[in-house]
Structure formats: C-alpha cells, structure tokens
Image 1 (tube, rainbow, N blue to C red):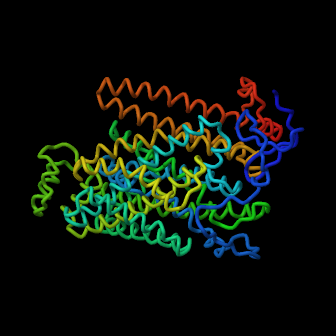
Image 2 (cartoon, rainbow, N blue to C red):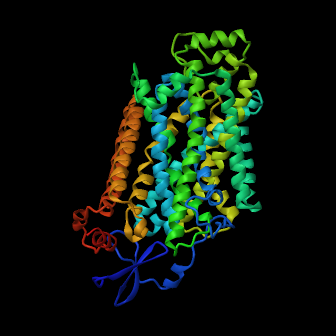
Image 3 (cartoon, one colour):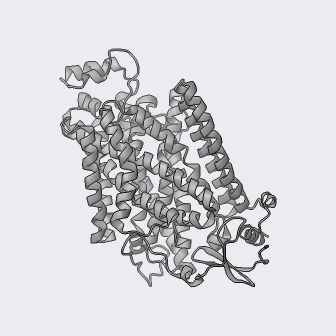
Length: 557
C-alpha cells in the first residue's frame, strides 16, 4: 500500500518525522519511510553519552572569544588527535624521513589539514544532532547497508588496534632490553588498558588530563630526539612549505600515499562525533550550537597542530640522521658501539629500512642508550593512549550500529576481545624483529576503509533535514567531494600497489573478487551521497518516496 503524501517535515533529535493521516512516522532512510513509531515521545528523550558526567559551559560571557569557554570545550579534540600519533603514524613518519629525507613533510602538512576539515564535519554532526556518526548511520541506512558499514568500520578498528597494541609491546621490549617478549607485552598492554579506561570514574576532566599527560610525554620524548640530532632547519622548512620531491621515485611516491593513509583514519571520524557529546549544550538554542561549533573547531585545530609538530619531530630526526644510509654503514656503527642488534642490518649496500623497533636500535647505535630508552617511552605513550581511544571508538561504533544495551564492563570486554584475539595470534607467531609486513598489511587494510567514514559524514552533514541551518554550504560540499574522491583514490592506489607487489595469482583472484564487492558498496554509498548533495535526478530510479531528498530540494530551491 502506498504511503500518504508527507507534509511539513519536522526534525527531532536528528531524526526526521513527517505528518500523514496515520500520524507521526519517521523517515529514517533515503527513499523509504519506516513503520509508524509506537512511541514517538521516546525519540525526544535526550540521548545519553557514554561518559557518566558532562562538562558544563560557562554562561553569561558575551565576549567574541573567551579562554574560559575554550578551556571548557578543550578535551575531545585532544583525544581525537591521539589517532594522529599512534604507533602506525610514528612508523610512517620515521620511514618517510629515512626514505625521502625532508622532501615529504608538506604531504604530512596537507594530510593534517585535510584531517582537520573532516574532523570539523564530525564534530558539527555530534554538536547539532546530539548523535554520533554511528547512531546517524543506524537511523538513516537500511539494514543490509548498515550491517556492511558496521562490519567495515570494525575491521578498520581492529587493524588500528593491532598496530597500537603491538607498538606498546615493542616499546616494553625495548625498555626491558628484550626481557619482555612480544606476547607478554601484548598481555600487559591489555591489562593496563582495562585499568586506565576506568579513569573516567574519577571524572571526565581527569580522564582528559591523563590523555593530555600522555601527549606531553610524546612531545618531550620525540622533542628530545629532535634536539639531540639537530636537523637542518632550512631543509625542514623547505620540505614543509614547498610541495616538491626532486629526484623522488616509486618508493617515495608510495611513502607519500602511505602518509595520507596513516594520518586520516576512518574510526577517528566516528570517535570525534561521539566525544563532543560530553559537553552540556542546549541544542534548542541556535547561539549555543553555533558557539560550540566554533570552539570545538579551534580546539581541534590546536590539538592537530601539536600532533603535527610531534610528527615533524620524528620525520626530521630520521631524515637528518638516516636518510640515504645503507645497511653496511649502520651495521658498522652498531658493531663499533657493541650493540647486540648488529645482525638486524645485513652486510649490503641496500638503503636502510626501519620500523619502530629498528628505529630505536639505530638511535642507540648512533646517539647512545638514552636515545633508545627515551624513544621507547614515547612509543609506549603513543601506543597506550591510542589503544584507549581505539577502545572508545569500538564501543561507540558498536553501541551506535547495534543498539547495545549492556553493562559498561561487558561493552569494554566485548570490544577489546574482538581486536585482542588476532593481535595475540601475531604476537605468539612472530618475534619483535619481523613485524614490518604486518604494519604494511594493516595500513592497507585501514586505507581501504576510509570511504566508509568519509562518505557518510559528508552525506549527513550536507542534509538540511538533519543539520538544519548548519548543513554544509555549496563551497564546503564541493571541497568535501574533491577531498573525499582524492583521498579514496590515493588509498585505492596504495591497495593496488601492495597487492601487485605480492606476485601471487591466488591473491590476485581473491583481491579481484573482494574489490568487486567493495566497489559495489562504495558506489551505493556514493549514489545516496550525491542525492543528498542535491543531484536529485539520481533519485528518480527509485520507486519509493524520498522524504529526505525532497526536503533538501525544497530548501535548495
């Protein structure tokens, strides 16, 4: 039976209700109308945040800019920025310096700016609707696409979590001079992560302060290495602000692609849209929403600027000290200093290849034991902090997509277990010196998941039926589409290059079949995204009434 013609759409808590002869019904999908809501009042109840308390915002401050208000909003952006400092990013940074010197720092800068713009959209969605991205996806997509989207995001979180836990385990191995094996380091990281995650029992601000402390540890650790090595400041600034890469080949190109894939992480979009719910904002007051958007953007910009500086520290250290170094040169230096790790570097003239573990070893060989231990402390802070935020991401995503209603401890246990099982499998099967292959695979895995965060966030923040007057304008829509297409194309290139390097027909076949299904799903998301962006002619192929798009078209006209 055909639904009655909808009249006068109304937005409630981010969901769209329309009046028909049957009463209020909810338009929760593109091109479909759900069954009448048996309890529409329940939809108006304030959505609870994962955190047990919220931060009050100072009132009666009429200044254009207030440091007191900025301080009240400070927290979510810094937790979000930790994903830009996880062990996967640190490894990408040191490889960038060792392979390309200072020449690709501008790529890191561009990737960070793009990340800031995408995080801005995530924060705005959470502020305006009171829902995070997973909750909006759950309401707006039908069952099968919703399940597929949840599955893809969970895969990205698992891949990121493996890098973070393994990174912490490597740091513990370095600090203990090899006495703590990889598998034991993984178990220690699991236990202390469970402990730290309950820090918010003492208050949300104390939890945020703890993350701030870990960021400070990273800044001091990698800053010490920077001062110790004394990079060429002229070359650093040249590499940061002049987009060039003279004499670069395929290795440098792939490294540039890897930087973008490592910096912009899909689960971080979901995380940031949830973290902003921890501030008390009256969403019925336009000025409060507008003010929250402003201060969250400023705070995110400051947080990502700090993360960018820390990443530059790592790139510059390895660019200055180890760019164009050969295995033979490093082997000789390690042998001269009596390092027990000399065998890590074969006696050949191939260019030095480093990872987090080897990075600490070569720092010890060239600059002494203090450089190694301070490096390991920085890696431990990076791994521990990103593991905790990764766990929060997993909980928000699972709660949003699956409507989990269970105790907090069970949520933590469930989301941690999903990632820990494959991590332990790797830890027991491989030693700490042979993990570069795993990091490459996980970087590829996360890079191909990016469309499943970028496309939905661009789609929903462009709909006036969801965002009202805070929906993306024309310029923002165009820029968002260009950035999304560019980032997705770069990461698909990275995936193709990696698969081709494996030289296996079996891998080619499975990759081809998987790619076909992957592209079909991406096309589905893009199709609906284009409809939301105003390309209403694409919606004519569907037979169902598209309430969201009709309202968008009326607003545009």
